[in-house]
Image (cartoon, rainbow, N blue to C red):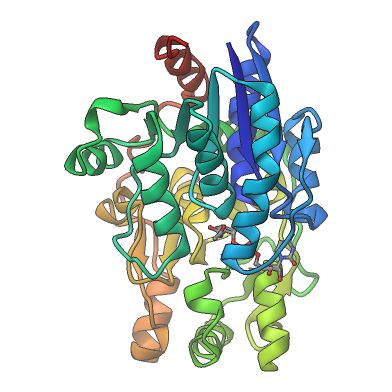
Length: 363
Ligand code: UD1
């Protein structure tokens, strides 16, 4: 079996870590196409080194742009690669512009498409990720869902017959990294002002809905600035660019900005922290898997299981809570009950390969 994986943005490289490892133990041919959507070393190269993923077979170097320009450039560049490779499966990941570009190129060439992390829904059509995941699910031939909830969404949309719950590949990577960090005592890389032995929060903020509205971004930053314990803000380049544009300082009061971390250092930082504040989907789940409370700066989440068990709380506008309530929420203690296992057993990478084999289209 020949599979072409199409990736491009940071969270896809983490998922690729699990899938590439599962393919490495087989006779299958796994070809990797990197669109270049993310190009800063800390958003891209570090993951290849860290997870031992071989260099991409193709690097398209597309870079940033408007949604249309970026997606269109990817589509045009992926077409000839898929035409030449003629894989048994084109595997696309998650919900970025690289996902929809890869899926569209494949369906238009009548090549079978499998969507990893299918069936997630925020039901918020203002999010670019929601367009990408809905459209990709509806054009894909095989839907690799991470949870029962995702499977239910697909069934409700008439896609149940093409869907399989394989578990969440991010669990594979997160648990392997956690075990290795704990085994060798990796120390968290924090700004010098933050004492790793005292309580602190890890924060990220990069969603377009939050960063692209100057008034909202200022309110979110200010809310974190006033928290009673230090907040280490791992600043995505989009956030840094918007903060510079709006004249917002990301290091002030309790807030200390730092560069995004490699995965291992992120896991070490979350393990050392007392909780997380974020608008990232991946980090909400990583906090849950690592047993840290999360406060999510969004109106909804795709990872509803984290909310149901009390590990995650949605606070779209902290500035609309009383100061006491906001502080108490962000620094709340962990629930008494340990997190459950709605995201699978950490063997999803192998389940992905086995499911692709089992559903190999006859051509
Ligand atoms: C993308 C995904 C988002 C995902 C996120 C993970 C889409 C629509 N969004 O958002 O779902 O959660 O990746 O990080 O695909 N930039 C750099 N260097 C880079 C990449 C981006 O400086 O390596 C800056 C540029 O100013 C760029 C901006 O960040 O214009 C936005 O980048 P883009 O790839 O469009 O979306 P992300 O915000 O990274």
